Length: 313
Image 1: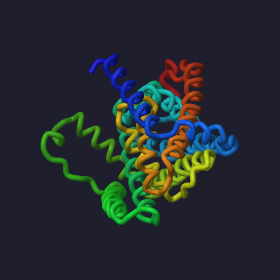
Image 2 (image 1 turned 180 degrees about the vertical axis):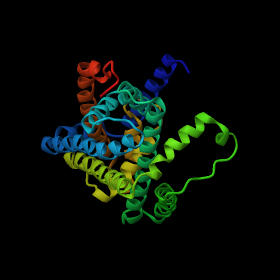
Image 3 (image 1 turned 60 degrees about the vertical axis):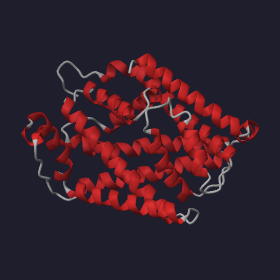
Image 4 (image 1 turned 120 degrees about the vertical axis):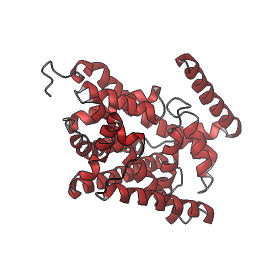
């Protein structure tokens, strides 16, 4: 699809979804909730978002080091903020991964190593997101039996995948992949995580768990800022479901997807549609604030992303 057509479809989707929601949700109640928002709580949630990105550099550093990419944690933090800026205009998981890959390569990383580091980080992060979200849904007393049954299945599947990732076992690759030099090299890089010492793998897992819980805490604080009556446990699984929905490359900055998802998920825990919409716009404001900082850093620091002529960091 041509870029212009893709832009038009995403724009139409965002406008259509928001129009439909505003058609059924009282706009006045949304405005009142936003007008009465607690500025201190919003600032606290925003600060926590920046802190969570700093926490993410812990496991990212271990993963990039395992691929031979020499990038400091400070640099990784700048990359995360810059990618957040691009993610506003390039929706979807693949677009965000592409922006990260570009940054790694600009810092002198091998293209294959950069791709492997992103796949490992995104793959483990997704498994951790599903595991934690499913466990929270399973333990949440406010949901019915059917969602819990689905959560149990998802949690078992994700935990099984995490165990396979953890144990030092190399799968037997059959067919053309085994005979392909390119795919064989990429597969060996992906399996490099399994060859790390147990301590490093544990650091990655624990860092990802802490980051997920911190991200949910930031989302919960945003809910409190606009007076949404929701428990932290509910926010944990709601965020997991929301992140899965936001991976769809059909809108800009999640407009329409975020609002519709929170309205739908909120009905499971007794959150009114107007409150869910106000909560969604508060989350959007936090996301755009982080993206703005990333954009400012990107516009003023682009030359520093390029490696020196010698190729050394």
